[in-house]
Length: 383
Image (tube, rainbow, N blue to C red; front, side, top):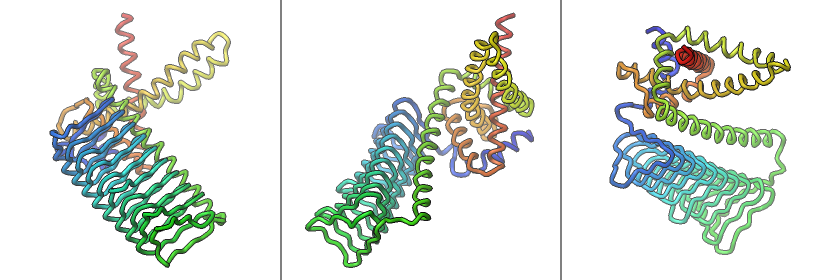
């Protein structure tokens, strides 16, 4: 029981606070479609290779997928991540979207943060609050009421900006003939912006040539690295979520066996997993250096790598099983609890030191339980 309390406090404190298991909608799969007649009244958490949401969500929504299409009204906030993200309907709250290509084509009554390779705010799209647009190519043809900040390699503005406008581009900035900028413009670029005939610009137009000082160059590099890391993190989370769904769907009995073994004998499994992590690489290197054991070393190394990857997935499954045990008084292994466990583990990874230690222990325990279960199954078959 002490072990369960320890894990709950360290790993799940942050994760459990914003998520209510009983008041949440979960859905995941290779291709996920939520039709118009399926109204979602809870917070929605959806993941898949391709995700299309055509219904109304009465609260917040978090979606991760290879392709994300939001075609239903969202009455709360929307957090979206994918290879491509299309927001095609009204969002009453804030929108935060990241992807290779991000498109906003409707009204956002809150703030908008859009980041991607190509970011487009189409004609007819509106942002009632502030907006941050960051990408390689940024096109703003809609209407933004609040303060607008644009970062990118190139930027084209052919819409209306009612608040202050701040732009920082690496190559070029252009204002189209339909551009209407009602307040001040402060921009940084290698050369002055191209302003088409018909564009309505304020008198207060401040231009700074980007012969950037070294300090600012370092800051820009840091921002770029942060953006890359963020995208990689999103991809990692999506891949892990899909792996967890796949595991609990097709290897449910093994996943539950590992979860039970981990939670029942946690510290023993931590020890087994730690020993395996330390000893296996030494054994593999020793075998590879010997002529006789080279092929055996290659086989053991491959199995070890697979075990390490599997342990990461089983760690999330076990975290979900722990949450179910604390919330429902029983160990449940399915895709819903698996996704919640994935969120919990990723949330814990943001807690300095204590969270990292807890995740590491859970990883060792899951690895130890997986190896123990595989050993028992192999021994049973041999006998």
